[in-house]
Length: 108
Image (cartoon, rainbow, N blue to C red; front, top):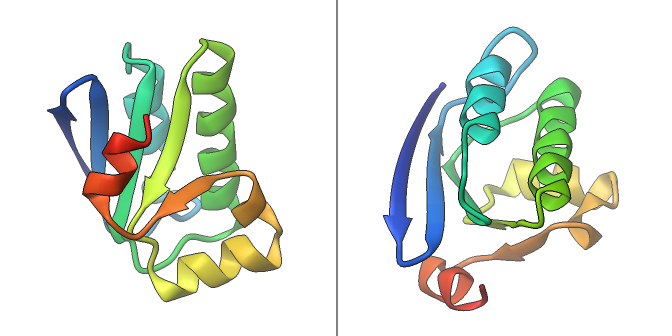
C-alpha cells in the first residue's frame, strides 16, 4: 500500500493506493495518521479496492485519533466493495463520505 500526502488549503489529503489488510498497509496508515499535524484530514479511497476487518479497525482508530486531537476525518471516493463494507457494519453513518473531492474539501 502507498500513501501520498498532499494539501488543498488547510485540508490534508491522503491518496491511498492498495489494499488495507492485516499485515499489509496497516502500519503505513497508522504512521501517516500519527504523524499528521493538521486538523482536517481527507482520506481518498479511490484506489483502495478492499480492506479487511483489521484495515477497517485501523481506519476507525485513525478517525478516533484525529478526533481526539480536535480534528475531523472525512472520506472521499469509496469503491463499491469498501462502501458495502461500511454499510454492512453501519460505519457509513460514522464517517462523512463524499463522491467528489472538491465538495469534500469545501465541507471542512
